[in-house]
Length: 252
Image (tube, rainbow, N blue to C red; front, side):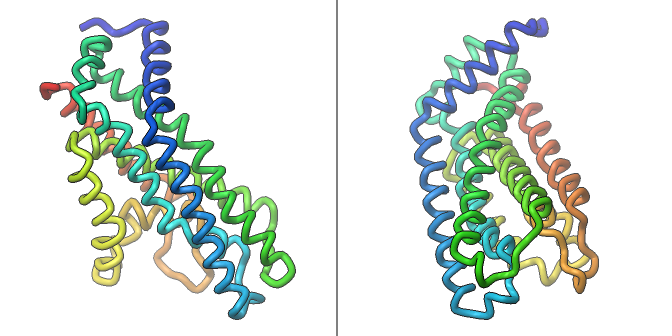
C-alpha cells in the first residue's frame, strides 16, 4: 500500500486528536488525576509542616505525589488505544485510514500532544501548592532546578502514557492492560527492587524517577536525568515498535 501524502498525514493526525479530545473518558481521567494530585500534595505538605519541614525541599514534597500520579496517565494511555475496540469503532477507523502503521503512529503523536501540557500543568500544580503552603518554612529551590524537575516530570508522565498506549494496542482490551501495568508499577516493581539491585535502575519506572528527581549525593549506582530519559525513551520506543508490527499483521 502506498505511503500517504503529507496532507493525508496531517488529516490523520487531526482525526486522532479529534477522537482524543471528544472522548469523555479523556477529560474525566485528566480531571480526576488533577484533583488527586492536589489532594496528595495537600497531604504531603501537611506531613511536611508537622514534621521537620526545615530540612525538606519544597520540590521534593511537591513532586512526592508523582509515584501515584502516574496511575492517571497509565489509564489515559490505555483508554486512548483500547476505547476504539470496545464498540467496534476500530473497523471504521481502519476503513477510513488503511495505513495502519501511520494511523497508530499518529495516534501516539496526538496522545503526546495532548499529554505534554496536561502533565506539565498537573505536576506544576502540586509544586505550586506546596510552595504556597511552605514558602516560609521549607528549604527553597533555584528556579532553574524547578524548571528542570518539571520538564523531567512532564517527560516521564508523557513517556509513561505512550508506553501504556502501546501496551493497550497490543492487548486491545482495557481491563487486562490495566491489570498488567498497574500491577507492574505499583506491586511488582516496588517488591522486586531490593532483589534486583543491579538492574532496578533500568526498569522504566525507576529510570523515569531520575528524570525529575536527581539522585542525592549519598546514593550510589544511580542514573543522571539524561540517562534516565534515555532508558525511559528506549522502553517506550520498543513497545511502540512492537505494537505497530502486531497492529499491521492482525485483523481488526
